[in-house]
Length: 335
Image 1 (cartoon, rainbow, N blue to C red):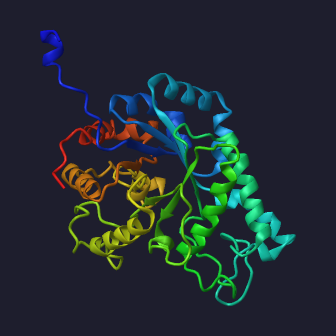
Image 2 (spheres, rainbow, N blue to C red):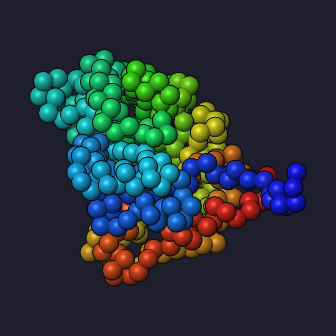
Image 3 (tube, rainbow, N blue to C red):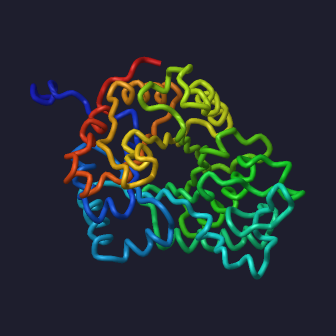
């Protein structure tokens, strides 16, 4: 071994295998996100919101340029999707209301989600999941077909004994089996978020279902490890972390991902573009949060970065994407 080789330190695999951002179509159309992700040392850019929207975008010149840039720069492409309204089209309600959820008053409604005990509904969901898996392949094999955004599940006599989390897992097991017919290596996220924050207790996830934990209600001016921090009347950080730990006991840490909001301008603006502000960025909170997740064995981390687009840069300058990426290079505390 020569002197140069002897003095060259071995390459160390970063602890976090996924270091990502989740962006919407307008962000990709007006800002060069692949270049920024690459410069920041990120691994993954994920699209968001609805399957039909992303499928249409990726057929455009802008969408093809985005995919080409990610390939050239060595970035992974995933799709984190509020999918249920595309997987079970609402116009099917007129044909078969029993496919859709029942509310607490016993009424079938075409607004959100499905009845998980309707075999016809599950068959339609599975068929459309296969279609979108062909249209929107994930370069990592990790797929994200979420239920309707924070909406309740079915309360019919057969479903009401299952929590929303258990109902979600039942649907996810069916989707995973279906998409593996066209993508044998596929794995599928169980989104622990809003009505599904509690861990499932009655339906076991199939092998290949991984946890994605999204604590949207937490505070971002205080570290997640501050168990007493509480956002208004919502769950405290301690209560949220207890839910994370309960989910990890069911799904395991292998493959588990935190879906965070550190860079999510849309959240900080209350999802109203007219309220646009410079992105609040708390670097010490972010670094402490990474340690909190690492101690639990999570090795996949991403954040929404919605609305960090060309308009944002023109008004406020570059968002802290480089600082976000640099945080992943800091040494983590020993477990």
